[in-house]
Image 1: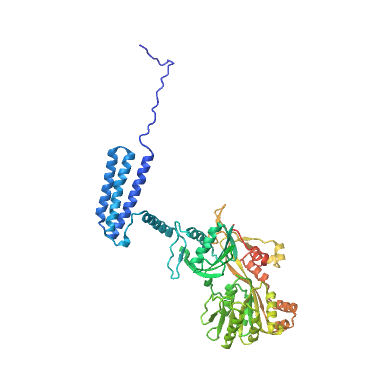
Image 2: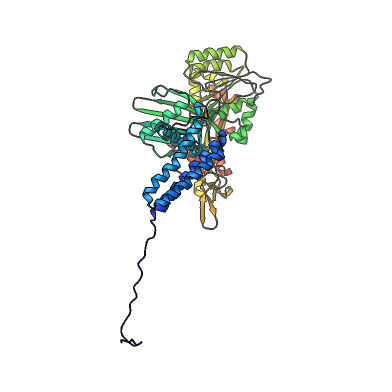
Length: 560
């Protein structure tokens, strides 16, 4: 008999039990998804039976009984993969049975089909419903009803997603313009916000072409015609940002296609001269002139710099109940009460416009506004009539004296041009600093002297940021401007208002003496007006440099 002592060197090693897998991990997953799918289908059938009053409780009982029977047969067989198809056949048979019973109780147009095409149609309906729910932008009919959002295999489905991404970027930032250009190799997209283009990620060329076709189609334009210049309008609903109108213009060639979308072009607001941005000294010179019913007032600026808003703000100072006020425009952007607006079609020839203008003059008006002086042949007619009628019109020139020379040359008579001219206003729009995130700083005295600003009277200026401080060290994107540092725009002006002495000097052709006389009358140059906006804290030096820099100025910007 063998014995072991505690001091024995023998070691007894106990065997560790091996782990055993009692059930497959895969099978419970299969059961879970089958049960979830059955529950989803039965819930749908229950709602359908309730809506159509088709013995809801009876069919619920049948579905549950079939599921219990399927489970018992499955368990009794004891073989998972054999019991699975049998159980599914039992459950599906009750679902099919409900469909057949339902088709005998409802009109034919509500029948459920059992074909593959019918199944695909149901799947398509589900995708369509989900697309409507997910969409942040809905296109609208002319009556204001939503247009179905394309989904699935619809060739415009991706196009809608693409235009939705552009609108989702544009709306919160107050954009007013979207530009797209595409050819067979590349595309370019820019969203204009407060006069600056923010480039967007380029799309695949074919998708960009499809986006343009998609917008044209719903704007009432001819999709097949890619060369002719076309215009159309389209309404959209952008959820929390409400409804908006898109003015669409497109043109192209055999190689490329371009589209411009202007957002709420016709919703221009009428502003007072103060809100436009005219300085007090400029208003004091212009307002007495408005009371006269004679002379020409010219507004000169490049495109997209607020010419129409300024012209409408000027004529709104006249009383339409005591004066006859008429306009002749290609696009009536602001309807003024008591003012007779006449529209001319784009591309109308100069002779036809002249006949319309003569007809207006025969009606003895007090004030006439032309959207823009499109033909120099009209200048002599306007100058001749300006002794008894106030004229307002626009010119596409960048500076005051260039526009003045064009007016004199178009009239063809120095004395008549001078005697008929009341004022010439040049303007630019500059972005306003976001008041939430602008940063104050002490300016360099040397820089101030170069700008003819007194350093001892300007303790601080402001610059754009786009960031707000959260706590001591962390910063976040500004919630007001969404990181751009600017929000909205204001006008800066150069107002040349002529008195009798100024007209006499101008008639003699002495432009340098004319300029000196205006400066003695406290006329401010455009740059000086802009710098006063900087001193007020409304804008920044970098912004007026961009806006007043002419053609060489940088026209694009990047988010910080």
